[in-house]
Length: 79
Image (cartoon, rainbow, N blue to C red; front, top):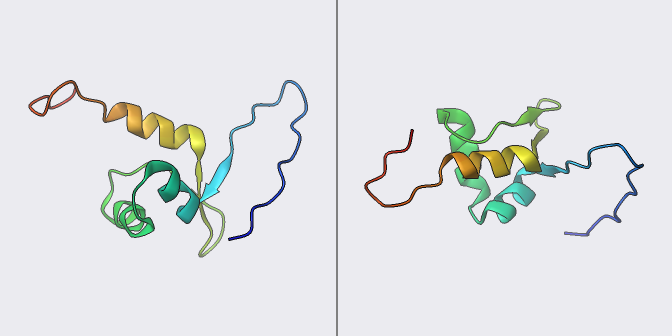
């Protein structure tokens, strides 16, 4: 996969990268198939549908999804 050059973001604009499914999966260290499954079943990170097959994830949504799953023990059911 060819990496694209970074685009300079003007001051005052929030730089929240938008990632493809493969990039989001790599960031989360899961498989793209797992994210696809979560999109179908629910319970996954919030995603953007930009077209019939164009699914994207905001990096901040991935971070938020991870934080919502933080636990202090294996018996912790969360809030």
